[in-house]
Image (cartoon, rainbow, N blue to C red; front, side, top):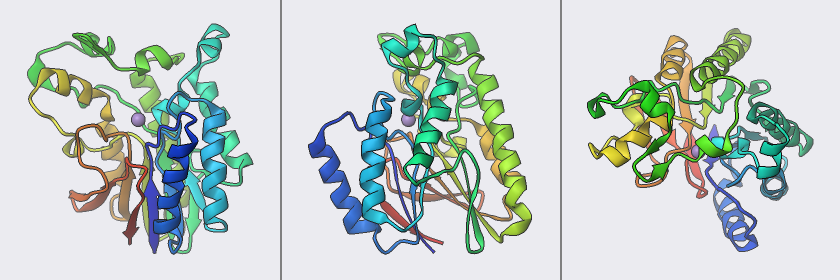
Length: 271
Ligand SMILES: [Mn+2]
């Protein structure tokens, strides 16, 4: 099976970017069996940008199934949304509704089965399990989401009715339920995430201003969950990590194939 995977498009309305990106999809994805987008379709969470990208891709790849999960940027709130007390949880469900309305598959709503393989997806989140100990900071220092002059943008643009740890756990429970629903029906599972599930995939550079922000790359608890069902998990694709790291590469973690798809240039993976 050929899987065409990409993400982190961060589209902000520039047609020229969209045209360049869709040419790559046309050139690289058309003989794949399934297309997977690992989130951060938009830059600022504007659903009209998500719609523009998805409807364009859908038109190109149709009738190949197009699976979509959101990234942290896709649940960002505009100033207006923040003022009207809309939470990023509502934004998440609005995103998934839009994905379905456009004829794509919202993988966070339910898993998707193609032949003997199930695709299970979650945006994932962070619970500070990737915090680098060597910095000697407390969890509250990380919860602050700012270091020196730099701020992690989720701090300003994501509003949740609970903590990051609780949000991660909520998504993790949902993720396990989804795995259980398909586990006995298939031979293989492909996990689709935005955030990173294994610490081994996080790049630490022993520079405080870099490593501090590695904390927000994901959660090891998703990694534990994946390993729990590891006898069927043949592939994990993820996004989110693209600045200053190599994208479009695959590595094995505890004998599970993992691929970084955090680039608008598609990666074709065979399983
Ligand atoms: Mn991201």
